[in-house]
Image (cartoon, rainbow, N blue to C red; front, side):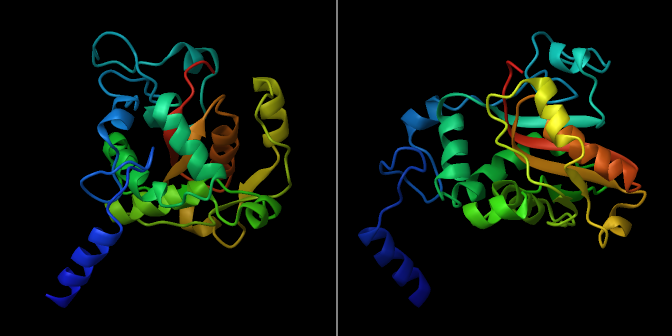
Length: 242
């Protein structure tokens, strides 16, 4: 009773605000109608490789987008919750560069809805790693926050340091696909003390944005080299022009 009164008092002083624009909303960690209208959630028929939306209906066969057909992925399945545009892009940038870590709590719920087909076999969840120098500068790994939230919602095992960046790479924005693959290929490896945890298991790698797929490919290769039986990927947003 006392806690309920305190929560009511706090909500009167600090009413819930939209995670996008800061306007008033009905509950914490939500979006107003205007911001919600700018969210481009992915539903219906999707690419089995990356989760990008596809026209038509599923026909019982594996469907892939042009990007995944041109560049076969080393992982088995992938899903994306949102297109990287509109309000979704703004939220990802705020989470990644604006210290808006609370966005991960809301976004992990969207991830949970989109990755249901990937949860068979109770995969081990892990994030795409940051190099320690970048982690020191940013203070947190946004992919790790998403992975932690997804693991908590699904009840699946989570290993935040399953993978690690063995060397620093430059910012990838503006790089071509080939440049991304060249830079990232040797930069990610399994943590030596965690290799046994993925041996003969399904691993689900979580990231905030998929552009070319180079980062996720490097992570997948590291998992497979460490003995993982299968790798799947879950990303919050997908850049469809990749």
